[in-house]
Amino acid sequence: MKQMRTSFLLLIALLTAVQVSAQTDSTEIKAVEKAVMQLFDGMRKGDSIMVRTAFTENPHLSTTFIDQNGNPQVEEGALEGFLMGVGTPHDEIWDEHLLSIEIKIDDGIAQVWAPYIFYLGEKQLHCGVNSFQLVKTINGWKILSIVDSHRKVNCGDD
Image 1 (tube, rainbow, N blue to C red):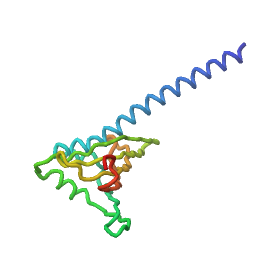
Image 2 (cartoon, rainbow, N blue to C red; image 1 turned 180 degrees about the vertical axis):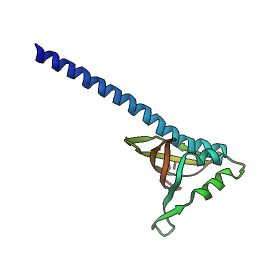
Image 3 (cartoon, rainbow, N blue to C red; image 1 turned 60 degrees about the vertical axis):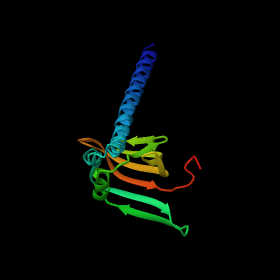
């Protein structure tokens, strides 16, 4: 009987730990998603400060694409140039529609995979996938790097 009671208590403890872990994961997933959405909300608003605070101090930004000769290319970008573009007044809204978002977290790192279509105002300019790496800091989740693919065809409505 004592062994059965011990097994029962162990099962209750295990189920409680799984439930707490699931709640934590859900909270962390929402926090990671919020950090990513801060970037896109800032882009739509043209708010470079909002965008800047979504990133770590020295983030890495890259874009991949196929050039006119069919060769794969990688273009490195600087956050300061991106912030200047976001913060410079422009007539049309920069609107990156995320088609889905997949988040994976382990301790203080997160990976986000997010296919997108980018619109300048009402005009679709390009599409691809954003791959984000985030880290948890004392100020919350921050974007450490973004690598995105960039194409003008096969965007779902061709």
